Length: 202
Image (cartoon, rainbow, N blue to C red):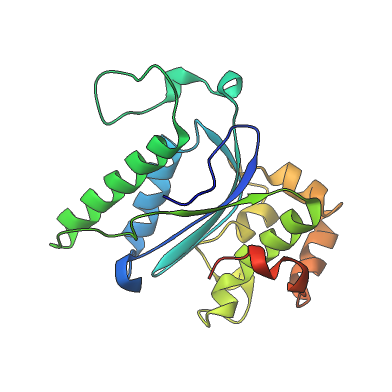
């Protein structure tokens, strides 16, 4: 497992890719199912600030709730018996395992879907937080899927610009950039990642 522990009260950049860099999403329904399972397993233990799903990997920026902030009645487990301690790592394992089982069944495949250990980086400064949001939203442009962030359907960029109800922490994200206009301007300019380059995951 990645050496950084998941501790409540902290912000993390969560990342995983397909085993041997293979695809983890094969069709639109896979993206929808991933998000449904994320809501089931991860929403109860974390607030989400940004996300992006690409064919063979994903990026998520979360705030991991403390034990006192978690509504345990919302938690989903793969076993009938609830554990005495809420484990964020186990919730992520349940999430990845449930998605893997669904994909294997739907696409007649076997074995691991993801790399064994999901990556996580502690986000401990506002500068890092702000640039990471841009980095996550810019990933589809960076990898050549689209020319503009707004044209990519599987990221939180559109949700932040929208006024539709969302479980994304839209208000807090906009506050990081002061206004929605500043958010859009920041995302329209190529950002310099030199100061946080060692913290980014590729």
